[in-house]
Image (cartoon, rainbow, N blue to C red; front, side, top):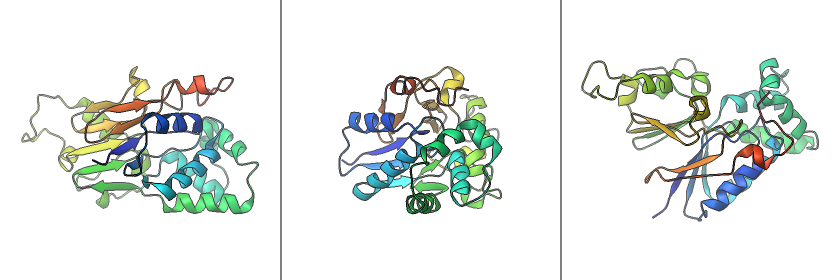
Length: 242
C-alpha cells in the first residue's frame, strides 16, 4: 500500500529534512505533501528549495505555500524585502541566496509560483494555516488567510469535545472535511513536541524553526516520524530563536 506523508514547516533546516526522509525509508510509491514555510530560520533555505525540486523529479509531491514562502517569493521577484520578514528569519534566507546566480534564483521563483494555496484529496484538506469561509477554502474572500489564518486551529482547540457534530454549536468549518492538516502554528507554543490533533484538525508544525523537530505524519495510520531536535543539527545557530 502506498503511503502519504504530510510534512510540517521546515524553515531552512535541510539537515533535518534529509534525516527525516531517511527515517521514513522513502519508497518510490510514497506521496509527500509539504505544508509550507520551507524558508526562514536555519541557514539552508535555498538548499531546502533545491532539495524539494529534486524530490519532485522522482516522487509524487505536493507543495503548499506558507506565509514565509510568500515573503521570499516577493523578494525573489524584486520587491523590497518586508521588514517583518527580515526580522523573522528572512535575513538567514537572504544570506543563503548569496552564492546563487540569477538563473538559479529565477528557477526558485518559478517553483514558488507553482505552489498551491491548499490541496483537497477526497475528504482531506491540506493547507498551511487555515480559512475563514464557512463554505470552504475555495470560497475564501481573503487569499492571505490560506497562509496566515490561525482561527481554524484555535476554533478546533477551543471547541468542547462533548459537543456533537449535529449540534448548532459545532463549528461549521470543521464539518466540511473529514480531516484537515495544517502547519503554521508551532505545537511547541503549547509545550507539545509532537503532532497535535483537535477534533478533525491535525497540526504537524512541531517547531522545527525553534527548539522542536521536523515531523512527517502518515495520514492513513497517523504514525509519525521526527528528526532530531533541529537546533542540535545546527550548532552555533539560533534558528528563529531571536
